Image (cartoon, rainbow, N blue to C red; front, side, top):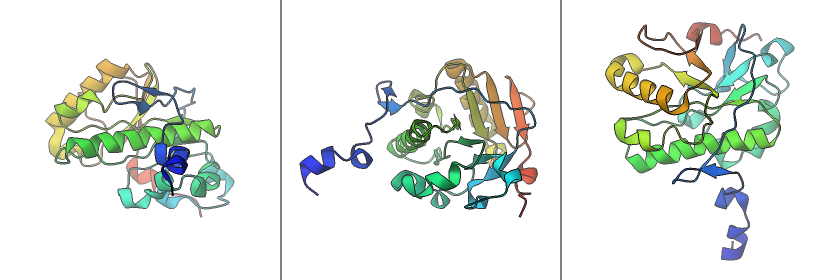
Length: 207
């Protein structure tokens, strides 16, 4: 592939969507979403030509990264499958505190790029927000519009509650989300308009 070809390839450049902030992170626009009786299914439980009951669910990506790397590397391949569902949470690429910051920044940018790509295809998307330590607060809330509905995951957070709550409160201050889809049981200290989704229930897909 020549230099000119690479610069004209959107999957190489990744610059085909509006971006924000000093990092140029793609913007996931806020969209209206009815959260009454909300249900989620894991990306690993989705199927081609799924049944009508499952199609009423949203899709979450609170699973190991290797299960969904392909949606960033070759996003067109899974578009038809994910397009069946009511809405999509953006993929929760890991932002572990012991990752180097450049890796955490990369994970946030990939999260938002996939969300912007799905929105460009007419899908309803909710940005998943995650963070590491305080150093990550400089970028981990970028690419999300003010007052948007956002999603967070609680898996593993109980082992580092203090760090989680610092990031959560920083998110509230930065984004001021209208609703927070919380995958797992929220801490009692968490403020905001929280819609809790039971982890066990999300595994009960209809086959």
